Image (cartoon, rainbow, N blue to C red; front, top):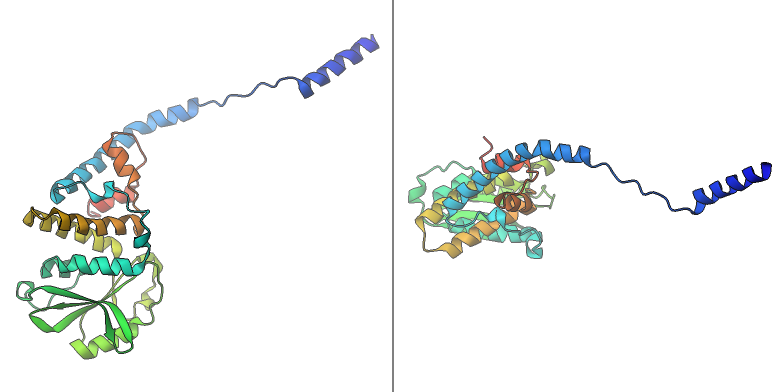
Length: 265
């Protein structure tokens, strides 16, 4: 009897060690229930986002720029690229639009200012400011603009301010940056204009430009290219959710994106 028991124990050991094991199957029912419950909410959010994308597309007379992926373009990794492109965009807008984009109150009627002229890397003493915005009919007025994406060297702005004060009788000083990366004491007298406010203001003004220049779609597209480059690379808005929404595919949508396209109301 003892020998028979030993044999059975040996076979049991062999079974545990060498026998085929059952692979446990995950229970996906809980996940499926979660997805089923979330679908109505996701569809509602998708409807809201799709409506905003369609509204902007109608205003631009072309597809909303967020439906295109510019996040992988190496050229726009450079801070100077944003300054160059922004300067070009501002020169194509009306003077009143330039003031609105920068949130600066003009001391004169913008309609009497003439064409906007943006000087890149304009020398002020020993330093060079990113943008010096002038107007052809107001020679003694200018707006000094520093453009920041990832650079955190703010101390030089104090020198810019002193130089501009002497040259143009204390003009506006604007710093375009991502707010989370700069403290109040780093502004050095400049007024912070967040990228989020700049890009949304540009959306509105480019929409107006598109409505008045229906035959010049190339310029409109190039200006919107700048907007979406900043939106995707500096604001962190991916093209994935907008694309899935237009295909009527349930997807998680960043609430911040809906608020942004709706004007942060």
